Picture 1 (tube, helix red, strand yellow):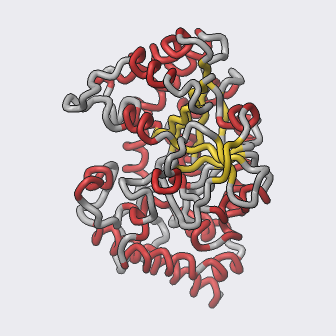
Picture 2 (cartoon, rainbow, N blue to C red):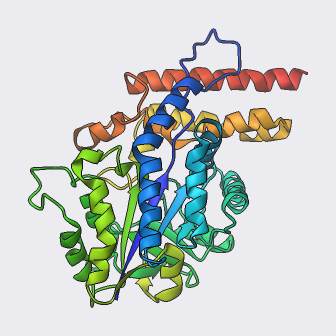
Length: 395
């Protein structure tokens, strides 16, 4: 038995407007740009892909299943700018074949800086998913699959059944991401590891005509899935949802591939689709996955260097989280919401100075001309927020 576990990340940040040290208002976010980008991605990806998924769930009588994590911020933007997208996610939820995972509401790096803030954001996100989709998430996925052993312990303490994380070669050694694992000392929590090779075949290599396996057909991919039988239980395909229609344009044939994949998988014996929660319930673990240091699914290094690789990023994050006690003492909901929206990982990703293999990735949806522009703009906003704190204290 090989179960295909499709998980999609759905997230868009509230991008900052150009903000100078002379700005006196507290309007930090570029809503015209955010609206324009969200409508563009909705038309190219969210709406057509949701329609394809709904078609596949209905055609296969619920046997085709997928999972999503939708950040609280992308949901807020759906509600404001493209409510029809949120309606399409609700229709998927109503099929019973779609699982919604827990994450930080603000798609933040809070776990690295404040456990209290991390727990609060996960709680806010859980309440949102319950209210919108009628599900209580049982599986946690931290921002960008950032994970270590300590996060596994916290997830178990919060009552989650499983956590998604990267299947890193240097940690797995000879073992395979097609099995489930547990963190050291936390036997009740199960870890589902991303199969980055097969995930990246779809996300990055699908339209690469120089790739030896081009073109990738549903039948070929299903045969790769079939090879897992006897050497594992799951094929964890963890992808950015924008893979469909945005990163891989419709002209590449990505939607045709998706439409034909379930049938190709079902044609081969003993294969099925399961959500992460179903995989955790169905399969036993095969040992411990020891992650003493932080990993993520980002870039070739699978570490935190996309967000913490230079002094600008470290300084911006340190100064941001240093304000936490003062922000929370104020009891000002608008101020708290703005501070939390500044935690979104994208703001620090835009400051990344990495190049080479990952350079083009860091340019995607980036509103800045350089990492230095991103840093200066962010710090101008943060200085304004710090000033609001001072004025609030004086009042």
